[in-house]
Image 1 (cartoon, rainbow, N blue to C red):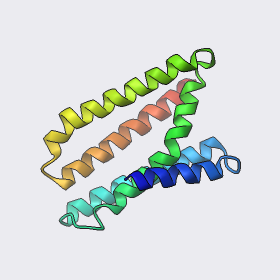
Image 2 (tube, rainbow, N blue to C red):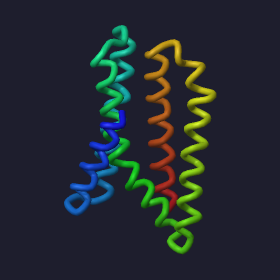
Image 3 (cartoon, one colour):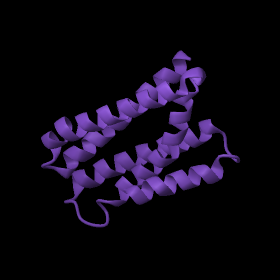
Length: 138
């Protein structure tokens, strides 16, 4: 997964001057959505086995690595005079979400790769909805 994040961030860095942030965000979200759905389809039809069980996760991480820096910058730009406070709040929300997912949700679905994949799709849908909803409010 780390390789996917790094690759996504590297591609985002190279494309930063060539593509608009909106286009890169759409590509990142598309990669995440396709990978999450592929992961759910694979784990619903087959028993998890390497390398097929890992490839969609890497695709999701690639999209996340592409989109997350742009999303963070867009969030910090909302409060240009208080970037330090905004950065701290972004980090707090990310760590809170990670803690809740790993401490509450993951133990409930850890017995099945298909359940984990379904949670990934659900989280992607929520994240997409929140991001698009927040962008429309601006």
